[in-house]
Image 1 (cartoon, one colour):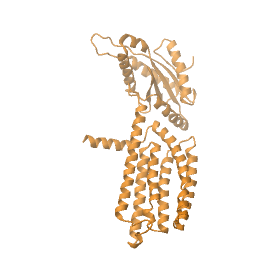
Image 2 (cartoon, helix red, strand yellow; image 1 turned 180 degrees about the horizontal axis):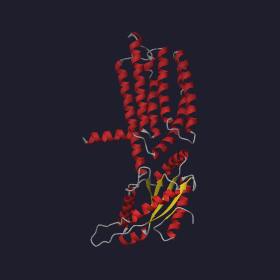
Image 3 (cartoon, rainbow, N blue to C red; image 1 turned 180 degrees about the vertical axis):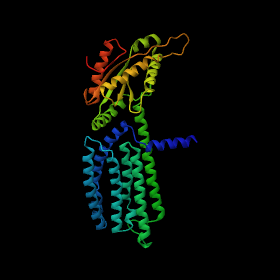
Image 4 (cartoon, rainbow, N blue to C red; image 1 turned 60 degrees about the vertical axis):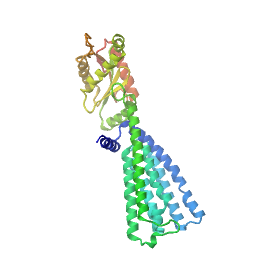
Length: 377
């Protein structure tokens, strides 16, 4: 039962939309895949050239050169799109579909010239495998499953068309061997296994990246997550014409707490603060541990509303002291100092907003701590 649940959970993870860290990695992977596609497309000219020089059928060489030229043109188009600063979310699906469909088209053209070549051309058929394996570079299991399913459907339809229209004599060839149902079923199984293996690799990559984006102490997203997530949030806010605020939160007197009660209890205090704040957030707010005793709260609010929101959370933190849970131990009162910055008024990227919020946080500390500052003083 547990094993079935684990398999089901893995499958759901593979088919779920990746987080922003994985999407950013996938965007760079799409560029790498586009460059690799251009290199492989150029090498495709060697296949018909070799066929022509070794006495292959002239029609096959013509189809090979035409297919290679077609693939090279689109490979350059995909590379141009992948190089653009804006990341098109549909692009990985489009390029994966192109890689698979181009293979099917070439096989169909070969079959029109010489029927056994449609199903027994091993060199062209291997392009299905390459297309599926290349999806691992996108770090998105949905693309892998999509490419694998598309390859199975298209090649399955090609098999059905050949066997429905060809006689037994037409499926025998001295160049390609006999085309049999058993060999074609085996190829379909190999495509399914390739898809499953590639999806497993993507899942493993997702898990490793996910662990790198989560703070081990508090369980909150960490700096890595923030640096990858913020550009997407800022771009979305800009497109929608709204503000995005960032609050830099510092636990007051954290060093004194560590000195008085020890680092282990200090870590528990920090976790307690994170839990108190996290419990009060809504789905459109993100709490991140930046490092040490500093947290960051991202809110889709203008600076004035963000200040009011942080005032509520500041009072909430002060109203929930930490109880060590040991005999005679006094509750530890928690207060926070906060600096707030908002886009676009205070900056247009993560670095500018963090810098402005940090300056305002320092004003809050100099002003006596346990306060929120959202304006330069």
